[in-house]
Structure formats: structure tokens, C-alpha cells
Image (tube, rainbow, N blue to C red; front, side, top):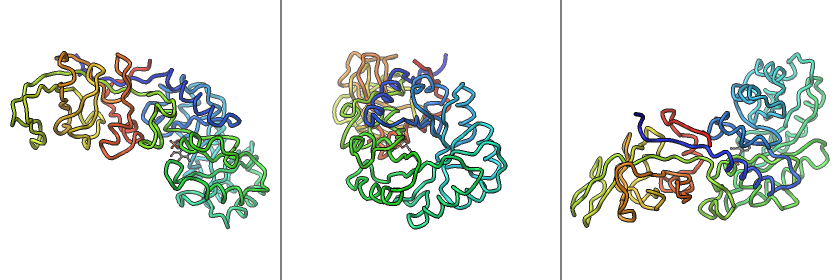
Length: 364
Ligand SMILES: Cc1ncc(COP(=O)(O)O)c(C=O)c1O
């Protein structure tokens, strides 16, 4: 019998969240961002739920190949563009659109032999200082690309550093609009946070939005807002069961390092889920979990294969009871992935991407 741990991908929730993001910028086309194996969900597993996207954005040629193998004939965008010259052959073969963010990528294009001109997304570094041409160099890059027979349509792109925080996007939008004002071509600016928070703002209206995390049921600006506020649904549930119950007396401790000490009689459950399943070890006493759909807390340290949970709010729970680490419990109760992520000092992104290969996944 396999360990009682299971992840479930919720197709209907993916559909709902994608539609929710589309509604945030109704005039824009939507890239379904499926990099990092669809944020840990699995490209093949999310494809049905994200079929209504206008295109798929990702990083990796292998991932692009997988999307084509699923029968997708529409747009695919490489968000970081190519890494070496021969990647361009794959772009030609698979009809991939690609980001151009540096001179080296233009050099590679200039040497590339292709029958069909490539569609490229020229990236402006509007302040994030990760990828993209600096504002003063952007026009020269555009002119150079425009002169290449290997290049067809040139679209314009930037990425926000602070769409989820107090600094916001105004300065980067100003830079982007100023630099690109009289250039032709489609535009794409917004990630999830910008789409949800500023989608209605005329200054960021664009041809495409690129939402990732919100489509996967995590609030990009948690804890300022949660998924209920943004009307998003969990797309991944990580669930386990209790494999043992212990009755503690006052003074008894739990787990490695005796990290938790009971100050009163306490019934605890042991769930089959640990850091080797992708549950963060930084979640410790107080991190939220659901047992039989009832909210309770972890007590003690997360170990490789087990966690220990306080059963006080669920006295009826026992061996075999359902434990929801994140997502949706059988009774419909929701524990957004953002909550354990915050308890671990990280983000929903990291938890969903770190789901361990040993966890069996089903699609619902
Ligand atoms: C260029 C680009 N666009 C869009 C996204 C999607 O961002 P998010 O998952 O925050 O919506 C990312 C993710 O980091 C990205 O790097």
C-alpha cells in the first residue's frame, strides 16, 4: 500500500482562475504562464484547464516541445529567449516566439538561417534590472532587429519588479510608455499582481497579459489580499492522512529537538507528509493545516516523512483522518497555499514548485 499522500490538480479551478485573470484586463489576450513545469503542477496536467489561454509562455525548449506535443498550435513565447544559437533552429521548427533581451541574442539571430521570419518580443529593462535593454539602448536594439531579414513582427515587453507591493508599477509604466510611444507592435507588461491590481488602469492596457501565480490559485499580494479577495480558487491540493495518534501529558515534547512542549494534556496526530514531499521544513509550531477540513496547527518540527498536528479542534479525528496541507479539503474547506508559505517565511510560488516527485498526482 502506498503512503497515504496525494496531490490533486483541479482543472475547474484553473479554468476559473484563468477566466478571472482575463476579466481583469478584458481587452487583452492572455498568456498562460507554464514555466517551471506549470509552477510545479505539470504542463500536461494543467493543459486542459488552461486551454482557453491565447498562448503559453515558458522558458525551456523541452517544455515548449511538450506543449506542442499536446497538440497546441497557437502562440508559445520563450520568456527568456534563446540561450545559444542552435536554440533558434528549434524556434523555427516549433514556431516559437522568443524574447530578445540582450545584444548577444540579436547577434545569434543575425547569423540564423530561416525561411520564416521570427516573431520576437523585445524586452525593455524599465527598472527591474534583470533582463532587458536599458531605456537609452532600447531604440538601437529595435532598429537593429527591424533591419534583420530573420525577424518579422517585433512586439514590446517589460516586467514589473513591484507590482505586488507598495512601490507599485507607475514609474516602470512611465518609462515603458515613454520609450515605446511611437514604436509599432503588440505590447505586454503585466504579471498576475499587475493584472489584478492595475488591470483597469488605462496606462497599463496592453495586447497581452502574462499571469502565472494567480492562475495557480495564490494571491500575488498576500497577506495584503487573499485568494478570496481576488476570487481565485486553489488549483493544487496536497493531502495526507493520520498514520498515528499520541496522547501527550503536560511536559511531554514532540519530535526532533523536542521543539514543542505540551503545557496541558494534548492529543496529537501524525500525518504522512514531510519535507521530502515538498512540505517546507520552516513550517513549525503554529503553521496552519486542516484535519477533516477543520483548521488546526502543526506542533513541533517537520521531519522528512511526517508532521505532527494538534487534534484539539477535531476530537473525532483518528487513524486515517484526512489532513490537508494546502488546497481544498473533502468538506470544501480551503487552506490557500499562501498560508503555510507565509508560516515558512516564503511564497506560494516556492511551495507549489517544490512538490516532490515522490508525491503521486491526480488530475480532477
Ligand atoms: C517575464 C515574466 N512574465 C510573467 C511572469 C508571471 O509572473 P507571476 O507568476 O507573478 O504572475 C513571470 C514570472 O516570474 C515572468 O518572469
